[in-house]
Length: 280
Image (tube, rainbow, N blue to C red; front, side):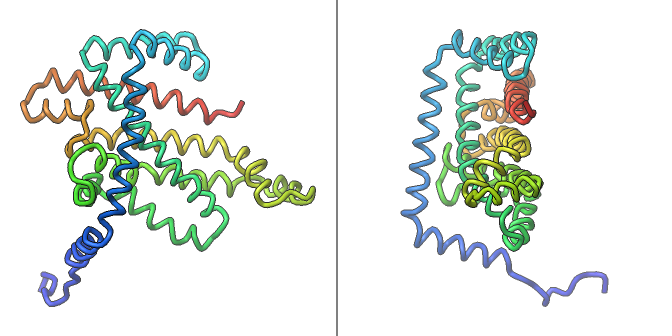
């Protein structure tokens, strides 16, 4: 009596598999096109980061740490941390990881900010999107790798596709919240002076919502970094691949070095992106 009756069964797994089969059969060209676009952007960012010599890249990051975070010491610490990655022999892999993170953030912002604006303008859209975003954020990240593999095969593109799905919710949510929390008096004053809806959005709401949006970008970036590491399981080369190899071969030291390198990137990215959220 305590077991659930077998006759009551919803074959959700079969339905989802059928949908996936249909998509692969009828929309293969579409996924090929999406994959080609994503790959091109990844390669572009990779070429940029790999082209920059380490002795130029490190001072640039140190300068950003000094000017954006607001402390010379921070800039020096950033440079020392990046130099540490180089001493581990992971400079090229860290640049590849960084390019994957930047690419995923680029696409996440391209999709997320407009969606956040639409949510802020419509309660019905917000009501529809909130459960969807809850699902995207609470779904185990490994689940995203399955459809990504089916659509794009092994490599960087499926890892990037899964990363975008995992990382985009924060920027959508915080763009929505930021715009909704803009003072109504400011919006009404702009309308009273004859501003159009477009002018109100770009000249009033988005500037005032900037701190919230920047926090969303910060969170999206951190989630992208976390997911890029997981993406190594389906062929995305980078520091995550080193961690995966270290686990498979039980090489504690190798895994520790790669893990520290990921943490260093996370700290630097977090401090720099979070500095944009501060009101100046």
